[in-house]
Image (cartoon, rainbow, N blue to C red; front, side, top):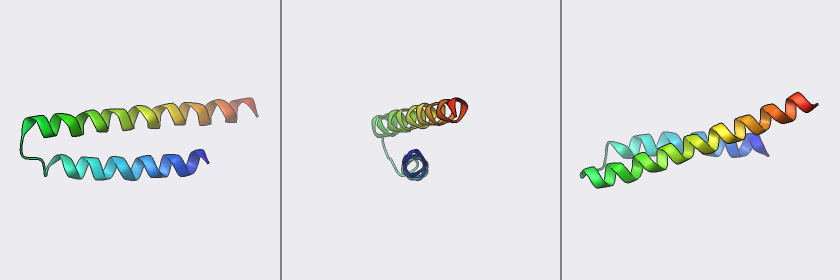
Length: 57
C-alpha cells in the first residue's frame, strides 16, 4: 500500500512541477510551491515509515 501511495505522490509531484511553469502570477506560483513542498514532505514521511517497517522485520 505504501508503494502505491508513493507512486501516486511521485506522479503528483511531477505534475505540480510542470504546473509551476504554467502559472502567470507570483501568488499562483507560491501556492504551487507550497503544494510541492507538502508533497515532498509526505513522500519523505512515507519513505521513513517504509524503512522503519523494513528494519523491524
